[in-house]
Length: 227
Image 1 (tube, helix red, strand yellow):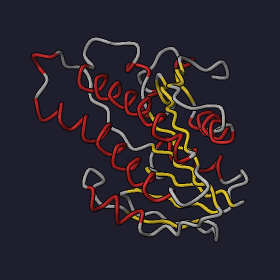
Image 2 (cartoon, rainbow, N blue to C red):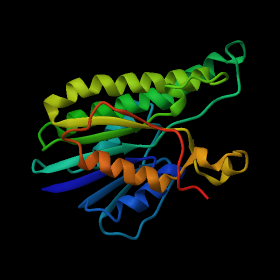
Image 3 (cartoon, rainbow, N blue to C red):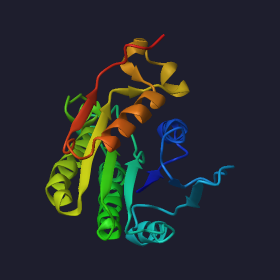
């Protein structure tokens, strides 16, 4: 049976390194999506430059590039998200609040909706979203960001109930801090940073164990492998 992977946000800090991991795995075809123009020299990769994914028409258009087959399983990893922090509630603009929900919740909802619609005639599959540790460990100054990610967690828990009817498992990873060049400049305790490649391996494991693993928000507090 074919295994086909969809990655949204494939050009971001998490997405691009996770894709490197996935390319070494046993997927038959890759559909990679990003708002930036990217190029790949690989016959197994289909790339599509998306519009604003907070708009449902753009999500539908992105999915229209995928050839869904009955005898295939589909896996979706969404790394698209936004961060906003440093402001207490009295300092938080309503536009910033809306932006966090648009990027962190609305996009995930629209992707999940279209995924469910598209794979209902196939052999099912799995979705993994990108949440954040602050969604379950509240921090001052991250009210919009943390609340939006908590809402994403609820979406995951709800989709589990509906996904069973479609043979789809749904999980999310909730890292503390991603190991990026930008974050290394200000993070003192490097063990708090999680490598994108490690997340890629974890997400692959979730996908391959989809029959028994669903509805989990995987908390990633630290990494023991940091140097």
